Length: 247
Image 1 (tube, rainbow, N blue to C red):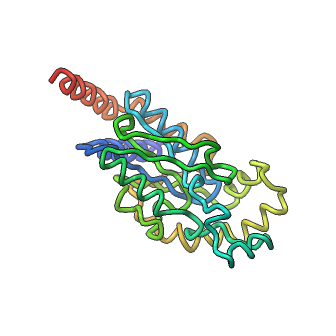
Image 2: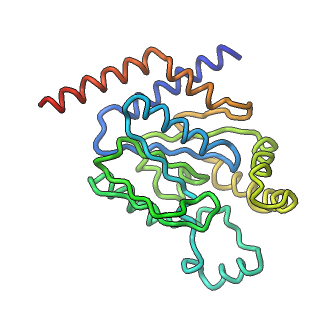
Image 3: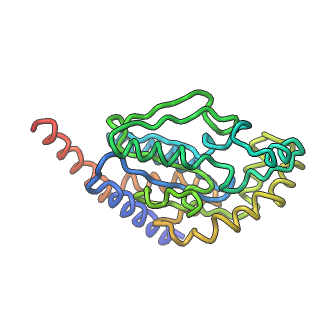
């Protein structure tokens, strides 16, 4: 187990260092996985890790880009009224809006995250400017799926791996809906959506992060934080930035 952890930490360090090499504008790192796998936990820990090293990182969640009522077709509105609309598919996300925001930041502009009615979306408009962000961390179910149309915009793709039962229990623990409703959603929409849109592309990830065990992500980040190569990377980055400011 210890040997596996060491290999995972080494792999994570290599992926992160490679992502930071020769940046041209803000770089994008995508995090995908099933519902309840720990995507937002990894994103938050990665943001903290980078911030500690002087790297300005921002987290944007796919949940903020779910369609609102005015975006739905009449057929989708009818399904929603009957509580039969499948939200666990890429078609429910406003990908062109997210794509345009990413492209704008890469060109030196800004990305504005819209207000979303999704429970895990943002509650007020948030704008990130290219000159204030070094790394944009995108997390969500489908951000690494071809249907999203943003894979080519991601410098690195991370897949959070978690067994189905553990992920389901985490979703139940959020207490957004009654347990019976969550279980029905899981078997009807969530698990089939994962198997159709996410799992087939998991092999394309640059790093797979196991997160079935408690605090697995935190242990991984602690390993990266104390890794000699990561420390050396941050030191070199600091020297480079110092020369840029001096020049």
